[in-house]
Length: 195
Image 1 (cartoon, rainbow, N blue to C red):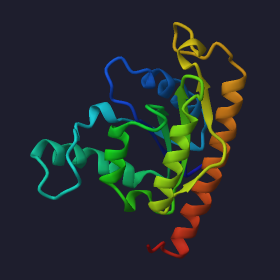
Image 2: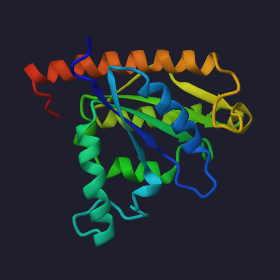
Image 3: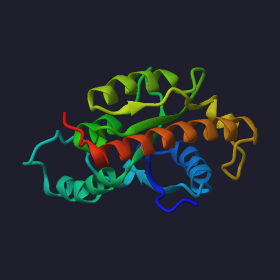
Image 4: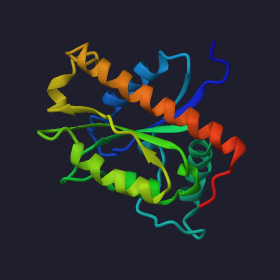
């Protein structure tokens, strides 16, 4: 019996008008939410108005207010899943800005990726994000969920047309990220992580 579910933050990385990210994130959050070992928090960066403000204590008041809501949610998470498209062979600027505003919130925590896009399915964005999260002392999982030609992969109800493959990939990803989250959370209770 699970008495202490892990807190999983699912971060929707695109903020563009007409974005497909919420469809992918909603489906994935449903997969994660069906597990009794997870408490899922969907963080949509479109609802966090950081704009282009660089990390600074003298940032505009609306940015500091947005951080007041975002930062505690990231800090409370035991693990992260980043839902990202691929823009010009990389990930969205808004996602990078949100990451740059935070550091310790990611220390010694696992990060997994759900990507989507055209031919590459967003995997080039994932490869760039792995290096960024390594710098933040996070552990990235090997397996991802990737939707190639994403707009054709989902039906009108926001569900994958292939009900088997994506669900199996999501299970593998969630098994890995929860394993790492539990191990790292337990380790930090006996030996605090210092960076």
